[in-house]
Image (cartoon, rainbow over all chains, first blue to last red; front, side, top):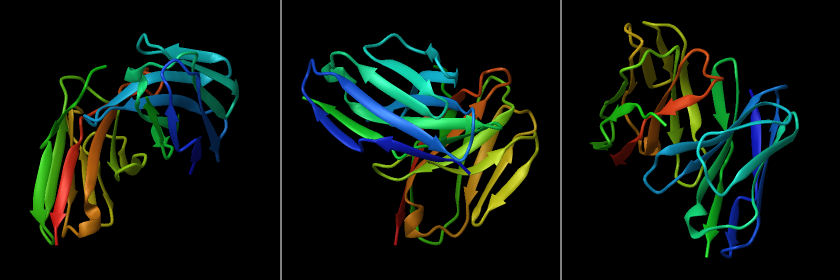
Length: 110
Length: 112
């Protein structure tokens, strides 16, 4: 099965600062990659997904962007964080109709 | 995005009891997945269902892909304290680039 690594695990950033969350995948090649955000209300919101290197689809307009510089690397970024960007961010990788999640990254914007 | 209707929202049970939760949708899905999430961690895949009517077990967990392809249920037998967590259903439609639609989760509390 796949292993998905995310870092950092926790992050406290001031408003207006940049953001970079990284995700790498092991155990598979050419996976579909996803970034989700989970708010306190438990729901999982799909932010971005990618079907290949350099191919990014955005699900909702927001203050964030994503990039996929390598097959198994997915990066979530922001140039200027907002308070509303706080949350639990999950990277996921999928193939063969199954999606696996990483450990998550807690972002607190202060 | 579209949400699945997952119920119940929360459950408080005694250790040893059986648990049942389900998800329904107005849309047809080709795949149903069930995840468990512990506090502060990512969801972990429990069971994946790929065929209408399929019944699959994973230890004390049993899940079924509804025959109409619009619903799925998860049963946990003889619950134990470590079953505590949030359980999510997720459905995937054909041609969706493997994007999942998630339920809002069922929070399970098990009293020892």
